[in-house]
Image 1 (cartoon, rainbow, N blue to C red):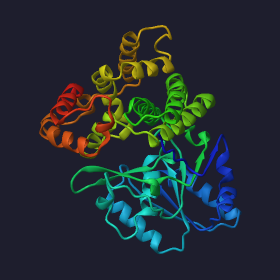
Image 2 (image 1 turned 90 degrees about the vertical axis):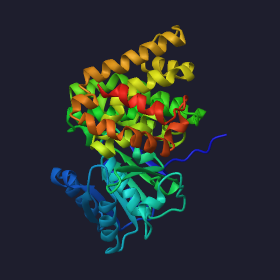
Image 3 (image 1 turned 30 degrees about the horizontal axis):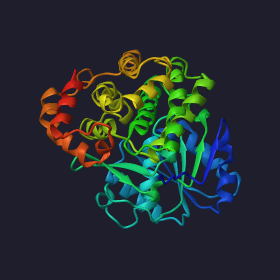
Image 4 (image 1 turned 45 degrees about the horizontal axis):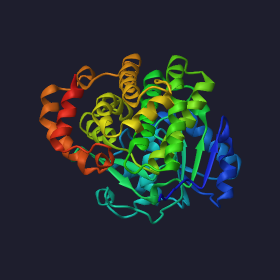
Length: 383
């Protein structure tokens, strides 16, 4: 048995941003708040979107106070801005941080964000959410999750429920053409991790499996191409579709240990989410694989790093090698080479392991660790 949840409307393809006014009208929406960040504003994209809307007779306001790894303070500021207008929907415009921020601003109301963190499920809808991603990464445009940071405790809080699932997703790969190598690499590996973890998760199901395998087939060969040539439209289109499918996959199954361990690294050391996933992926995959060899072997074959006839054991060995190799090719640092202070890292290992477990994601892993095993994995990843 599986319950499948998707956005009501997904528009996909180069140039579909132009269809935003039409899609809003189809859904009876006419007074959007756009939630975005200073970079999107400075790039001219916000102005382009607002002009598109105004040309169709749709008045909008924009909150540009989104910060990386959205904090409770930034969400509160966005909610206060929302309250000053007469809005009937919220548009998240940008990467994962603006889309995640838009979700919480649309849903929170008068409640405290910490009261909404997992295992709490928020299913009653807030304002309709429209997601316009500008990176091929988080898949947040199709998920029922958002992640908000409590700056007081350095905890990345996973918030879950149907309330956070966008009603509309506008997936236009042309918005990613200008993205630099580091952002392309980090968000691309994030998408790959979504797909692999969704497939090996204890919550896996046939629908999510099909999305996950398709995402792996798209992402693996096209990520190096998109990094090598940012204007490679074919690779960018494949990455954007792969990111969407990866988001659909894990939203309808779950992520697992990599994500559970990744969030505390991001919260305590301000490492971008995709990059911390990349740091962890090879080591966590090698540790987890013995508990689900056939599933990980399927991933290796879908990615094309193992032949169809190869044994599961051999395929998984190639998968782990390939994950180490892509990190080397894309210059993914270890926590040590990233510049994290070793003493602080060691001091926080226990807390990070406890926070990872508390998020619930490690419980979906094929091999479920305890606190000390997570501490050991963090130590292994260090150098």
